[in-house]
Amino acid sequence: KQEVTQIPAALSVPEGENLVLNCSFTDSAIYNLQWFRQDPGKGLTSLLLIQSSQREQTSGRLNASLDKSSGRSTLYIAASQPGDSATYLCAVNYGGSQGNLIFGKGTKLSVKP
Amino acid sequence: DTGVSQNPRHKITKRGQNVTFRCDPISEHNRLYWYRQTLGQGPEFLTYFQNEAQLEKSRLLSDRFSAERPKGSFSTLEIQRTEQGDSAMYLCASWGIRYGYTFGSGTRLTVV
Image (cartoon, rainbow over all chains, first blue to last red; front, side):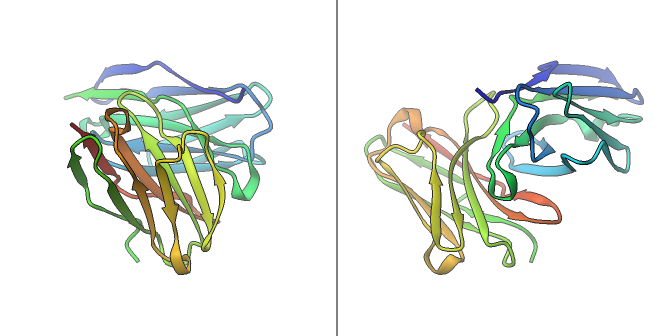
């Protein structure tokens, strides 16, 4: 069964810290992997999309890496801010260009001022 | 186009009633997906359209659920004879080659 696991389930850090969120997947034959942010009661905002041939993607203070062989991805957030507080979801696409996403349960991040 | 639009944002209904949700995808995206998310969980795939054709349905999509996408534009998701277990956030997404999935803000359904 293809599963996506995110650790930790929740994380609280003081403002300014660099932090890493982890995502692991059971089947390494992925097509791509996408990180999303979700604010309470809201929809999902795409942060970074990594194709299976790529090792990392960067956007501003965010950097996502992908290691297919070990079945892992990490989302690195530099210089965290209170506005970064949200749930971060990792989603894996196994089905090619038409594939649907398999999501982890998310990491709930709280950045304290 | 500003993104994927979903209506209504919230819906409260009595058990046994029918409800319908609407999703307007990004206009140039021909693929449209429906997901369901319960509290504390990640979204789960329900169904997917390529233009007007419904190409895949999850086992989560019971006979009480039906989705349409007439003319390959907006889509509707109908739930008949709602049950309390149907309470969830229903998310719509469209897919484009550059940015992957773009999700709407969701419709939160509460069945009382």
